[in-house]
Image 1 (cartoon, rainbow, N blue to C red):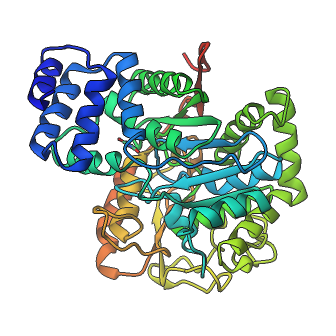
Image 2 (image 1 turned 30 degrees about the vertical axis):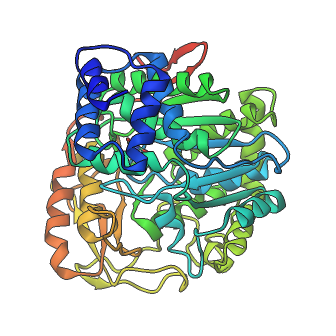
Length: 471
Ligand code: URA
């Protein structure tokens, strides 16, 4: 076999076999297929696409490039969850302990944030002492003992993905449906769970800007999962505006704690309950979605879900006092209080909050310029504003500042009077403030009429088909 013949075949619209894809992928990981040939192949895929069986074969070729986690020593049906990434998406921080508290083990390997959407690991690492770098044995032991662990993905899992993604990043081939689907699903399959719930975001802050593209991606990923013998479902959810109120690592962690304590922003809570219900049903812990939901609601109210997060934090070396219920931390009952309100004069110094999580030095309000209703809070622009402040990384090696970010005081549909705060900027570096403010000003739109509400949960994709919840 020769790589050039396979590139020609794809370039001319042919379908590659599993053996041919193995030749390319394993050859690339071993260094026998050079970057320039893999780049040409990726571009051919970008333009020609892949057949359903072919993209599943590419996924399995990628899985075979490294180790697979064996979760067999953990009793029960293991259910994984993946989000395609969005702004303010802290659902894993809520879902992993919540679902574990309901009796479904969650052995989760997560990624770091890149670009405008933050990563779960970065958010968790704002807890003093907590490590996400855990050996496979300790990871398995922790899930057997307390039902949950959230750790960094082992470099030995799907090495093909890391290498191919880095090449895609510099060759204009990131936003290809088969390449995204195989990248995501190869990591999920190698991570070893029996069932997978996917949250495919659509909207301005998502990879897939429009619904039809998100639907196509969701269908492809569900098909790949099912072909690999994993029960897979995908929800398509709205990412036009950020999820919840907090954007930025420690700010998001606080919001997740408030949500686990039974409060939290309605959209975040709802998404966690819906995703969690599907996880419980796939994990065999509930007969149907209604039973699953009431179980999860009880766990939020009783404190059991938050107690499970504390157990996880402690097991991973973190200080569990950093995730005490908000009233104990002195944050009061306001679900938007992440962290507590402070003097709102420009550049007022930030009061110490709970003392354990990092807090930005200064908070700057973004006032409304007119009376009316908020009709848009552009997720991409808010994500960029958080990045400018240092909450995210443009390149893998960038350091992030866990304390900084944005707290949205108004979201789409909220009424606002001129001068009232739309958002707060939490920042440490004065030089970064103007650019963040400019992005936030552009992110908000205020108009005279209350806008129609786009549903948060837009569709469910299973192996049996698509259920749409929006027109
Ligand atoms: N997330 C991934 O893991 N891979 C992609 O290609 C895109 C998003």
